[in-house]
Image 1: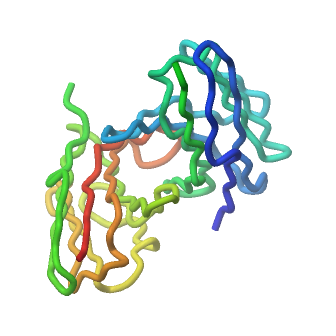
Image 2 (image 1 turned 90 degrees about the vertical axis):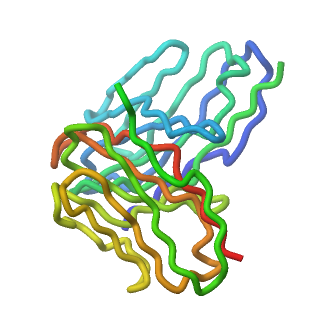
Amino acid sequence: ILNVEQSPQSLHVQEGDSTNFTCSFPSSNFYALHWYRWETAKSPEALFVMTLNGDEKKKGRISATLNTKEGYSYLYIKGSQPEDSATYLCAPKAAGNKLTFGGGTRVLVKP
Amino acid sequence: GAGVSQTPSNKVTEKGKYVELRCDPISGHTALYWYRQSLGQGPEFLIYFQGTGAADDSGLPNDRFFAVRPEGSVSTLKIQRTERGDSAVYLCASSSQKAGQETQYFGPGTRLLVL
């Protein structure tokens, strides 16, 4: 059973500011890391799938880095906008197909 | 194209009743997953289908929970003798291949409330 920690649990960001938050996971048996964005009353939206140590991925103003040796990933939001308000979930995958989700970081962007 | 759909979107039931939750995956996706998200937590894996068979049901909490996918497409999650602790958002996801890091595409979930 993977122990996945996301911090902080929640954060408030002023519109226009940049922010980042962390996902930590066991580095052993690592296969891939998934990031999702989940807005209220919508489907979780896939952001990134990362596999290699040192991977960096970017989608618009959102980017993520991966360190598989120490077992963490950072997700960054540049110039936060109100539409970025959501819960961001990370889910590492070991052998097999199931995802093990962290508790999420709830982001609220204030206009 | 059409994404993963789930019905009903909301379900209120009484303790002890039986419920069925339906998932329509993306057409052509062979892998289908069920997760459950309880308040304040991340989604928790329940069961994974590859085609018609349950490849991994290790996340089902007890024998009151059962899921089927008889034709390898639509899946139904069945909960018998519901308990208040079963209240959660039940999420379904599908993906195109049976192994690897392929993205799992999620539906909007069914919000189950057991009174």
